[in-house]
Image (tube, rainbow, N blue to C red; front, side):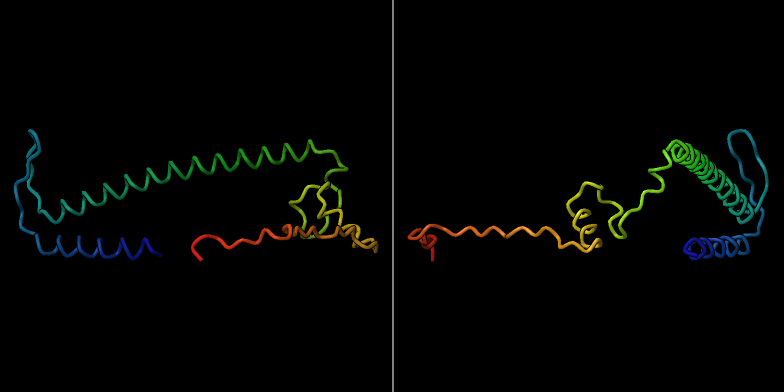
Length: 138
């Protein structure tokens, strides 16, 4: 949609330019000479540049599509190599990115089994008595 907002004013401006400049003018480039109106020349140049840009974008899109196909094929190949027990291994919901040996996964599995989670007491560090000095500048 944004391309339409950019392309449409340019096309309208070119059409207005072509309509306003209809008088034939002799044009030359190197040794070639021809008679044409500047408006028609502007429209032809714009069409040529548009076609060239579209072709270059299409080449890039084709490369990306080819890379995507190769990546999908590689994923299919790797999934086919997985052992069946890895594919069907149940994972806790919400913990799919955690490794199976993670304490978080173990606590979740213990909670699901009904066992109380192994809670560790929080460690509280208290400063020794008599070392409460004020920081400088207060």
